[in-house]
Each structure stands twice: as structure tokens, then as C-alpha cells.
Length: 144
Image (cartoon, rainbow, N blue to C red; front, side, top):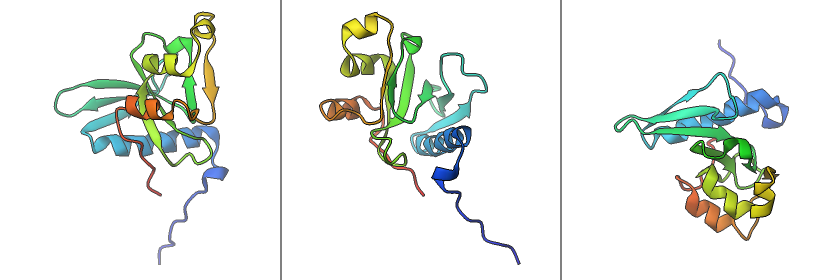
């Protein structure tokens, strides 16, 4: 008789395992939109993975984050950021937004021009609707 598998608690997962788990969940979601995803083995200040549309070959370069993040190293690279609206429950309300359009919503011009990035555990309430509007998909939850 085969033993049933038991789910691996998210809290017990190491950082790299969590990252790959999140990638697989997002890749599964993007497949509903006709995208096939491929993990990139080397992240050189760019995308963690790419998503290619099965009909029109549109390519999305996606950086996977556990929280809202902007960083000058992604500037003008046509990178999309995938993150949950809050890191309190990392299986809920994921969005995928263009990095460079997220920047002016999330930071002051002076701070950005000085070369400083920004990250926060929760999308600030005052911009959450704008972030959702920027997302190329409706906020989605991971299937458990």
C-alpha cells in the first residue's frame, strides 16, 4: 500500500524552496492565460523567469518577490514584478506589474534619482488600487 503524501508547511520551507514553490504557482496561473514559463538559472539583476505566450510569442520577463519591491537595477529592462499585496499571507492576492510603472507610485522622485530602491511587506493602502490597476492579471490566490 502506498503512503499518502503530506503537504510541506510553508513555514518549514527554506528561502530557495519557497521561491521555486511560488514560481510554480505563478507559472500554473499564467498557463490559464496561454503563457508557458521557464525558470532562468542565472538572475543577473534581471528576470527570475520568462513567460512566453503560446500564440503570439509575447515574452514577459518576471522578477519574483515576496513583497512589493522596486530597485534601480531593474530600471528600463522591461521587467515585471510578481508579488503578493501583503507578505502576511503569501498565498493570497498576487499581482504582476511593470517595474518602471510601479516606481512613481511607490517612491519619491528624489529617493529614486539617488539610486535607492524600496521594499515593503504590504502595499500601502493609498496605492493598492493603483497597483491592482497596473497588474496584468487580476489579483490571484495560490491553490492549496
